[in-house]
Image 1 (tube, rainbow, N blue to C red):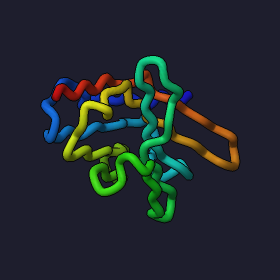
Image 2 (cartoon, rainbow, N blue to C red; image 1 turned 90 degrees about the vertical axis):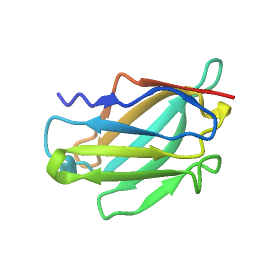
Image 3 (cartoon, rainbow, N blue to C red; image 1 turned 60 degrees about the horizontal axis):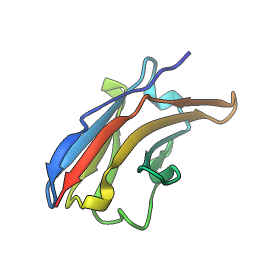
Image 4 (cartoon, helix red, strand yellow; image 1 turned 120 degrees about the vertical axis):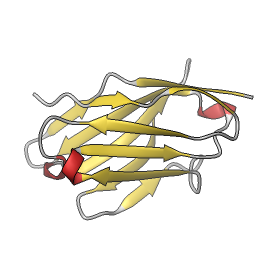
Length: 117
């Protein structure tokens, strides 16, 4: 069973930056799709960023130009660099790793990001 573990959340002032990490037991490039999602209080979970196995990326409209998803295969880690943070970015951020052929779909426990204005 794969259990992604997120870290790097915290409190930050608007305009600041944070880098989230998602570590996975196992080889990170065995996953076909790696993504970051977030859920704010009273709202549905939304996709923030996605990275596929050949390096393709996609971002939610609200974070384009501010957030960057990347991975380090040697460290089996996926990152989310968040710049120019806004109060509306406040949410719990979750890492998601998927394997298409096996149907594996793994979620981390989440890490809280709070942006104060």
